[in-house]
Length: 342
Image (cartoon, rainbow, N blue to C red; front, side, top):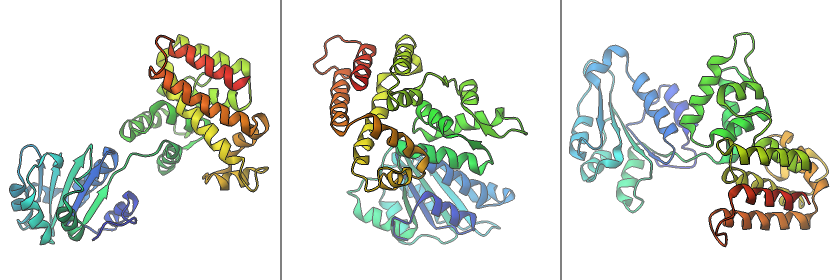
């Protein structure tokens, strides 16, 4: 099966849950979460428990060569419909000729899963890649973009019949970031803490279980800037200056840059006087977030927004040491906030 845009994590999982198994799964990419989820599902469901002793083999790429993997894949299952061969850390297999030969004629009764983490398959090996695509699934597990984290969090919790408000979603996304393995681990910790009669995550729950202040965080700083609340914005910046572990300029700059970049785009929206019009123009999943851009359009002129974007870039460069021999990051943040709000 050739790799196409339709080969996604969701499409693979739908087929697996329907009992449709390919002969080969080559899972590669920077995001280990999706690779682990696919591999674990196959390991736990392709065979019945009593079939695994004789029909499930797990290798590590540093301990085997391509010939050993190919030989194992060519074995026939014992008293089972199929056998499963899993290779973890497949990126450590150096010579792949024997595997390429196997891909050209894979055994239909074998499900071969190769997990290639922390990088992509060498694109120069065109014949090797083509052989994988013809044999089964070649799936690249990509890092989730920051703006997609709220959607991921909401979907993860919805599957577990738990609700969450938008502020709590943003707090978690900003605090944990795009490491999905860590993110889901933290969400699971929060889920365990919820009482059976109240399956809802609030900012207070996030503060108690994850340790993110519901009053002093990136979400509240952004909100204060959107509304030009000078007192609140300075309160938050001072708090972070005194509590550097709670947040830093390196996490806030992308947050503010993304907001003002989108605000500049919102100025060109055909229907910039309505949340729905702005949400559609910015390709937002929900009109809820568009209210901040409506407020921003009232509080900041187009010229000021362009100046702010330029200032954010300047502060970003200074925070990395360019033209800045000794100004602390806390002072840089205060300089930026003053510039934005005045």
